[in-house]
Length: 162
Image 1 (cartoon, rainbow, N blue to C red):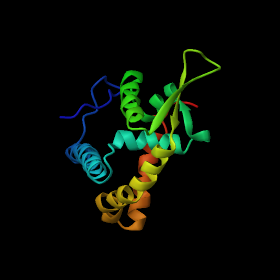
Image 2: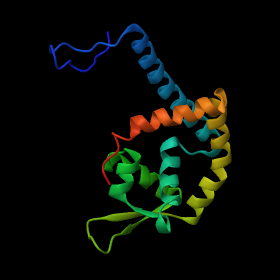
Image 3: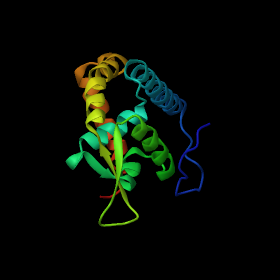
């Protein structure tokens, strides 16, 4: 049986019903397998991992194509240590640079290079095609938009306050 919330009235767990358990496991499988397939496609076609791509996306959409390392870690759900190692690799590839933050001597900016911007521009069409093939095109437009609404309902209470 799955773990549920404790009922306030009798301190008993609210176990998932069989259909709820099935839906929950389908969600876990879909999340895991979809992410793995998108990562595989992206790596094969562009040499980027999903984590690399997410960093490039975050930087490309930020003012001046730069973001504080601490904010980038938060946005990509990476530990600061893990992000630092990832940015090291991306720096060696020429996709990002690090710059000291003048306002805070301890802080650093991750800055998207022109090569990094060119890399994401080149990778984006194949990535979008992969997203379409493995997710979007499996649904009617209405069902896909409903999926987006359901995902937004999940994300909203989990996002950190800004």
